[in-house]
Image 1: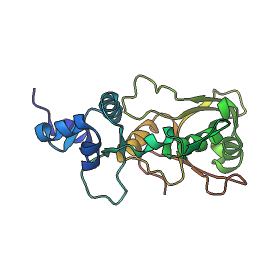
Image 2: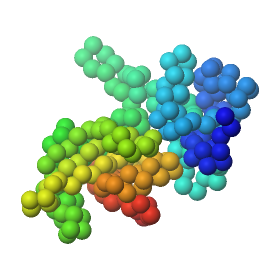
Image 3: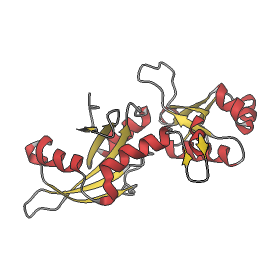
Image 4: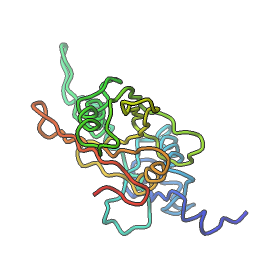
Amino acid sequence: MQRTQEQITSMFRVALKQSAQEQNCRVGEIVPEEGPVKQFNSRRVAEEFADEMCSSGDPVRLQSPAPQDPADVDAYLISDTQRNEWEPIESNEQSVTFPVGANTYGGLGFGLVYLEGKTSPALAHYFTEQAPPSKQGRVVWVDAEPQLPDEIEVGWSPDLRIEVSPGDASSNDVYFAEVKSGNSPFERQQRDDMQRVSEDYGVLRIRVKLARLPKEYTVLIAEVSPNEWPV
């Protein structure tokens, strides 16, 4: 069956970069046969493709385009230099030293916001001080890597599910959140999906600045709306 134009434009487009072709022989074989851009039904399916490539070849990963990037793609498949996180810089009988790659860096920011399910200072402060008065309350539950409700069909996989008690007899408010460390970008499709989810639930964009660790860190939290991405 031929796909409609609407179906084509809603797909997740990934450009297979030269670095990925050179790094991974399977990617190098795909490009001559299928072209340098592959289309997937969602970001999740694209990530599964990247994992499949890694299972039988050298590491590759998805990278989101810069906001000003004019290319009509949602992500790039590139060689995964993060593999260096698994290669020690030096080691001896007593210790081993590793580089801090993007995965580790991102995990630091996530850990500061999640705190293993405890209410973190950042979330507590946001919902008692920074959120609009109508949305303020007490954080009562934080869950990592939650599943979105089945009726919401998007590719985005949230980092957190947050329940907030407004302090009265009403039910808890539910928020889904994405956490980024440093200047890691939000992909176009990810932004679109987060805005779609915000039609039915609260959605938070959380960025953690780590440059001043170990003395301090900065957390910026903004709520996403269906019609506008936070500045």
